[in-house]
Length: 138
Image 1 (cartoon, helix red, strand yellow):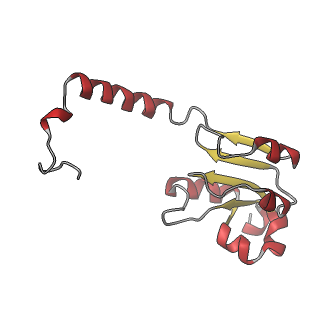
Image 2 (tube, rainbow, N blue to C red; image 1 turned 90 degrees about the vertical axis):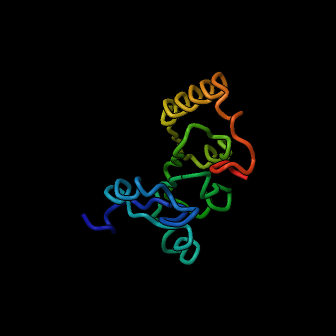
Image 3 (spheres, rainbow, N blue to C red; image 1 turned 180 degrees about the vertical axis):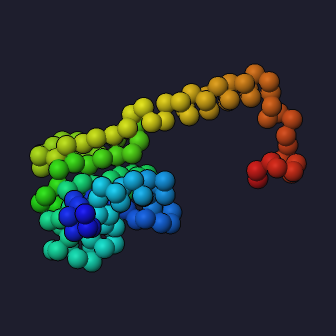
């Protein structure tokens, strides 16, 4: 199946500080034709109708009324993460678009970090470090 046969998914970028998680790129490429926000903005008329999904990583791309109006084939906005506060759910729903997220994806890492912080506080781990010590962030 060639890239043209795959549904398009809009992503912020594939690399750099605003790129999606590099571990997700190959999985997404198997099922979608990845279209970066920059490519989309340079060619809205041609790419807009091909995009059926928006994949949000780190709150990007922002989903606005302008964006939704320019994606006539959009079916779903998928947010990689637990929260949906960065989305106007009413606005997205008004376009007949579904929203998905991954609410349990960070449950174990969050619990692990919470336990590590509790142990560090109980054992007074940080108190032994002072500004200027090696390894102490300034």
